[in-house]
Image (cartoon, rainbow, N blue to C red):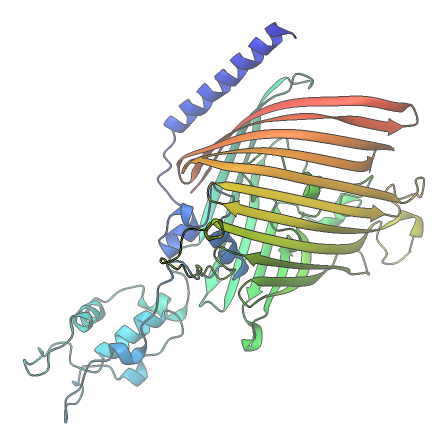
Length: 505
């Protein structure tokens, strides 16, 4: 063992930690992202360590960014807030008739305004007909000429639902040309929310990035067919369309395939291999954003199904996908907690929840098939996968496996049909509320660059959130495997250490 090299690595990690601590100390991170501002809850309501979602965050996502289940505020009915009117009493002349107060936005504010309009705002209540304290409060609020009443009644969010997320990373890779790299950074804008709980929207825009190959976010060759890659996602959701339980989603987004979105993980530097691998010249990945139309719904609170079509630019043929997942134990997909019988003895099943999902995707990529068709430059492929998410107290186990087939990955039929396999296993443990450790193992058998590669990765990660919207992540990737090509078999290895700071406001 080269102890001198080991010592240098240790000193490097210590230096990176010092850099992160100094940076964090100089950063003001009291602000909170858009969803927490809108619903007045902590980040930890929906996240373990952001951006990884817990079961309430998953329910929030599945329900079109409408806050359901845990902590949802109930809106009083109109009858419950109307003031009692004595016999023969009429509204004062300066009162506004309730029928003239209209709105489809904030139902609670609408009720308050109507209730106060049934009596004079100046005449005091008599002792024989006292006004409830709750109504006095509403009347006082009505007398305050709030400039936001019109906005609230129209359903327009009073606060702009916008957040910024910044990421700074430093890496050490002794085999790279640039052994130390402190210049990996990005700044992303995100906006999202719901409109009167009837529609949802979400969008992300990459304001700046460095040392990132954005062409990898596309799946059409050549890459200039996909237009701008700065927009990560931009979509609209029609919730419970036509009073059914079906949600319609349209725009650019990650089709619902696996259980987790690409950023829904503790690590900030290494995506899940099962979602992110490519084959040959095909740049398709299971976690990439696509222009798509999707329908999804929740059945019996614990079964989620989704399916959709992808319209790839300059391709006449559509691509299709389907997803189904089910959950046992824990909060359901509407964030409702299970009933607990306090008279029974504690059981392991009281703390256990299991979510299992499966998906399928079939498509075509390569040169455009509009106009002159060049069949040798087309690649037909499919992916099929299964995921498992097991949560028990402070432990969480994630497992993901996928198989695929590409009939022309090099887009020239120089190679036969290629099969691919990938698997991910990750174990997480919450050491403290703000400290999570994880260990991930990945296996990848895929064709790339004229050779077959069998790769294995071990990725330990530690994430610390001293403030809920600030995360410090230290991770290390040890990669090793075999490459089979015309020259025979050869071994490959790679070792990368990363320290990153992510904050959102």
